[in-house]
Length: 259
Image (cartoon, rainbow, N blue to C red; front, side):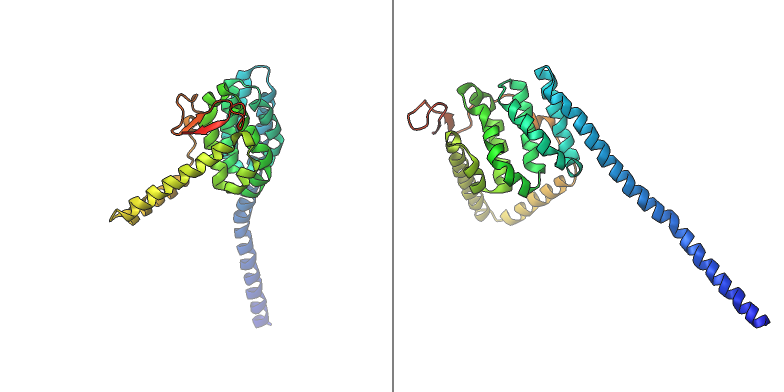
């Protein structure tokens, strides 16, 4: 009986140890649950803040509208995982603002479009090209808008081509702006030829390429947001080789000509 009692006692002790182990695990499980809840709460909080700022897009003044769009662009850039589902709600308002012609508002909207081009999932971005591309190019329909916004518009188009491919972007581009895509293709071909010639003629070409790739990878691991890059000032000079042509019968008002 004594032995049996001892055995029972040892068994109880093992049970107590097992229970203790389970209790020891509880703080870790609780911490993991708290982390998940905190992450979910942060995402919900960011979305609520995003929707609050969204109200400013229909503000009474261009200053309020442009400031709201710029804030939304920064939020989308930094919290894209939490906010990407809200982008479809905002795009129609951005399209409408791009038609206002107000310089500050259009600059802010083109900056937002640039963020959309790099943050929206590729499949969804490609599906929205038929409405996004004409809206982005709309400010350049007339000569004054072309002079002001041509470079910023081209940067957005370059991002779209990089994400979705030439064919998809060309199919969504209005005929009035088709020459822009043709010029961009030629520029890319020339740049690629120069790059290959430089690598072939350099003894250290491969190493330099690897160095540049490593630098890009390191840069990509931290936030690269820069207000000047996204919302830069007005265009001052024509990009090399690309100019607004005369109103020819073929191109119509605002046709492009390639020098």
